[in-house]
Amino acid sequence: MNPTPGEPPTRTRPGPAVALGLVILCIEGYDLFILGAVGPSLLSHPDWDVTKSTLGLLGSLTALGMPLGSVAAGWAGDLHGRRLPMVVSLAWLSLSMLLSAGAGDLALFGATRFLTGMGIGALIPLVTAYVSEAADPARHSLQVGTATTGLAVGGIVTGVVGRTLLPEGDFRTLFLFGAVPLVLIPVVWRLVPAVVRDHPAQTPPEAGTETAGAEPDESANRLRRLLAPQYRRSTLLFWAATFAGLVIVYGASTWLPTLMVDNGYDLGSSLEFSIAFNAGAVIGTLGAALVADRGLLKAATVVSFLLAAVAMIILSTPQPRPLLLLVSAVAGFGALGTQALVNIYVAHAHPARLRGTALGFSLGVGRVGAIVGPSYLAAVTVLISSSKAGFYAFVVPAVLGAVLIGLLRPGRRASAPVPADGPSEAEAPLAR
Image (cartoon, rainbow, N blue to C red; front, side, top):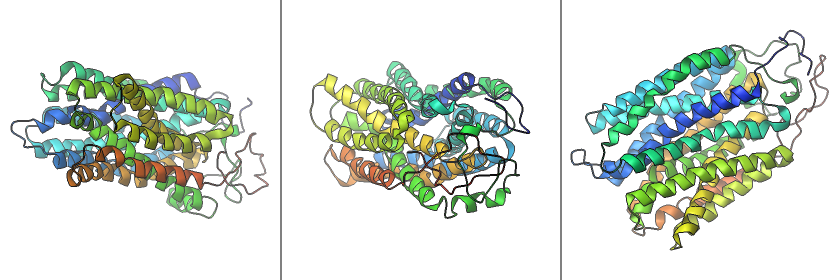
């Protein structure tokens, strides 16, 4: 591929970018799912008087910090490159996890979870945008999807560590692993470019907005561009679909082990279901990404939302243990895998200079779902005495998400570099 005028002849290679993104999001997945792993231990804490409602509140506090991190980091990443915001976010996340490990009371623990949420919220749009810009256009969904499976891999690690150390050990020990991101800071500084660039073949035409050699819009116009007629419909649908997806993700990350305990399984067994949940997210996301790269990104995303609904219904019923583990894996794909596909969709639909902002606002606005999710599940389980109620509560956002993605209009991405005199057609910048 020939470099475009004014750009260096080399770009970030996909392999190192995918590997680095995978590791960072693995750590983030650990930090995300740790509250679910320690939830039963918190409920039995002799001094903190934690109830199910309190557990839901802790999950919501984690989620409450995420919109701040997502919007700020996505915006900063477009303005100043991905490197510096990524380094700051990793340091922030490590410090927050270490503070959680040292928290002496429930109030301080809740405050550290809010700070952790800010770090988690910041890293997802930064990493997704970084890998998207390095990805081979022909394998864009697969390479970005591979990196985003790090969230589920981190969830698997959380389940394994929790299975090993709990309930006998002190749950605070699990938070000490949060210091690991500090090791990645020099790696990020070396590998992540300071300047935002895109593959020419990835850049969607934007009628009347920029030409190939034009200066990008000022930062104050970025949100206005997302809400301009060309992007408005897709922007609002992406925001709403992200809301629905994150209700599922953060509801499940906080409540899945506890729901399994309520259905008669011991803590060790419930953590095995959590491991299966995340393993299914990894395998399912990779498979769906392969399908998406064949022009079926929209269909793959709709189907994955619907699979989440079906899986949660089956999990609420008595089934043989092997089948329940398999269905838990399908539920993991329907939750984490679905949100990974939505993020890929957003990244694929926007040019590099707008991608971080688009991801940041999609995740930032959608984080309301992350805030609502744990408390929504807590309210359902408190108000409805049936042990099945928590599982059925997931069905509503899953079906809603499928409908929202289905409403996206098909569009055309550029398959070749944008000519120097600018695009000639007005096309909606959406994937198929």
